[in-house]
Amino acid sequence: MEGIVHRTVQVNGISMHVAEKGEGPSVVLFLHGFPELWYSWRQQILSLSSRGYRCVAPDLRGYGDSDCPRDVTAYTAFHIVGDLVALIDSLGQDQVFVVAHDWGAIVAWNLCLFRPDKVKALVNMSVVYRPRNPLKKPTDIFRAVYGEDFYICRFQAPGVAESDFARRGTASLLKIFLTYRTPAPLIVPKEGFGGSPNTQITLPTWLSEEDIAYFASKFDKSGFTGGLNYYRALDLNWELMAPWTGVQIKVPVKFIIGDQDLTYNSFGAKNYIHSGAFKENVPFLQDVVVMEGVGHFINQEKAPEITEHIFEFITKF
Image (cartoon, rainbow, N blue to C red; front, side, top):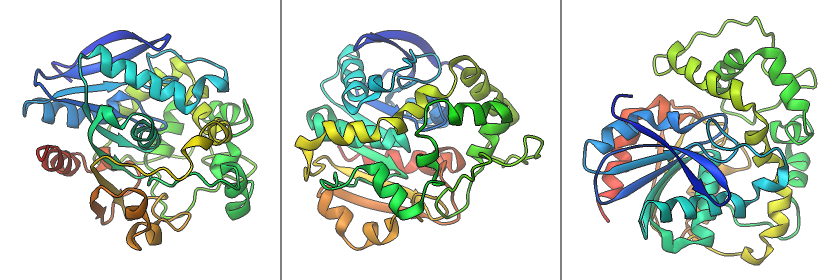
């Protein structure tokens, strides 16, 4: 990670940790998912900064070395997007390229909904944009389709998932999450997530013990409540975002997903992507890439390939 500079910026009433490298005039803003950090983009930062881009990767609100408010109401889409708009302004930029994955992808869609003027182009991964359902709350939909054992439903009750995670230990839990590659909805039984705490997990070649140790050191400090609060604010966001019902995403987009990703194999995502419905809601969608044999944490699992996809797209603008 030589040459990556770390600093803390004051944005939207919180302290945000930012990792950055590069001196170019164009900024690439990287947004991580759950349970991740700026560190998930380490290889893209090193590669794209060497090609003339200024790469900026924050720990989002609730993660790592950024402030982690405890209250769910501090995690609305407006808080999160507000953090990013303030960050972009602090960089002296009118517009940036955005690259995002998982929850970061949802945040990026919301940034494009609220402030499309801030985004030159977006490379988004794993989570498609779905317009707000005006009739049903998100958690009602999840329960109706997959039941109470669906992981997002399991995450709703404050403190329950945190207790389950604590029993497994941070490093062990992160190994379970980051190596998960079952191409199906994630179901968590009542006895908790991830099986026995003593289960041995063999890491893939793209993830080292050193990587796990870095992630674990930060989550040991911050806990998981901040990240889980994104899930717990889903219904609150649904209420607050009623004015944006039916609004399209109108920035240039490239979308990348793995065919082994749970998100590709849930809620009819395959048909949604390939039937043209996704394109109807994201009219400036220019490219969809489905990577064969790749799981959810695509930006880490296929880092060099993802970097090339990003570079190929943003050089058009």
